[in-house]
Image (tube, rainbow, N blue to C red):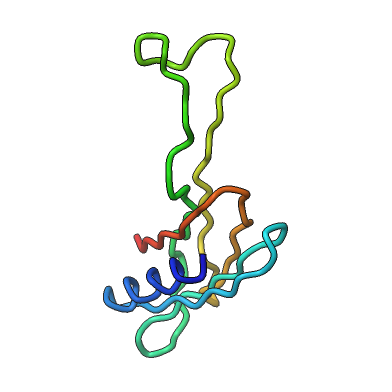
Length: 103
């Protein structure tokens, strides 16, 4: 996880923004702070938690999820940064990554 967040930080810094994230235990939340190159907080940045890989689905019913079988799904969760450029994202039990977008 930490390496992926560092990659996200490098990607956002290249795009003119910087992101600092601290990891906590899986049961907690990951605090996120987004700053511009001058170190000023960036409000209204969409911070999304996305699965690294899609959940495995049984598509034996002509490409559709099989009826009556238990299926698995991972959801994308999004939050927006506040005026201080801060938000948090709850951790998940599956591998995930963070994506940042500024409208």
